Image (cartoon, rainbow, N blue to C red; front, top):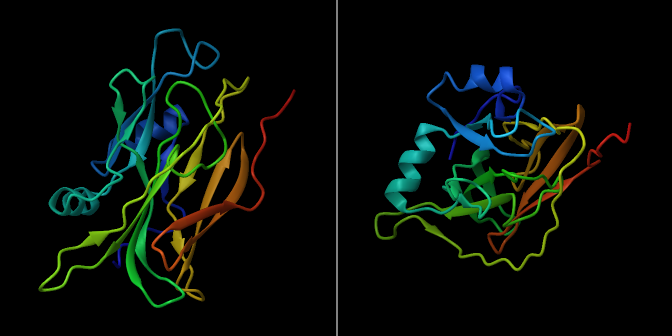
Length: 208
């Protein structure tokens, strides 16, 4: 519930040299991208780095929590481990204390710049365990239809560790970059245990 990372810690990195440095730490796992010949030598994957804290791995395995992996038909292995971009306690407007975890898992073979629940990000709002009740989460279901594409320039996505808002117990922010443009996601825990992410000024792909 008190897990926190400084705001300058990178939770997801696509720039190859920076990703390689992060992958030297056991807290990161490789996130393999196959986004077409525009980005690399054909057939050679690009290794991004995804933050996967050991404390969350242990808790998720013991409590059988969701959001441990995303399934992609287009990825060679079928599944990839997402990046943990926010992990901390939040309190809904109605006073519900939850461990909020937000994971980011962008397309591995194309790209969609929008943050879409159930597609490239997922959330888990877990009610803490008691002596008589195990940790519990609210089931979620998604109906989505998403078009993704191959941008002409690699987005080189970088997502920083999300930060709780000390002035609003339900709110948190996640800073991120695409195409060298920076924006902030506003996250919020609702009373129904759903977590929303809203970009302030979404980056756009340069046309030149």
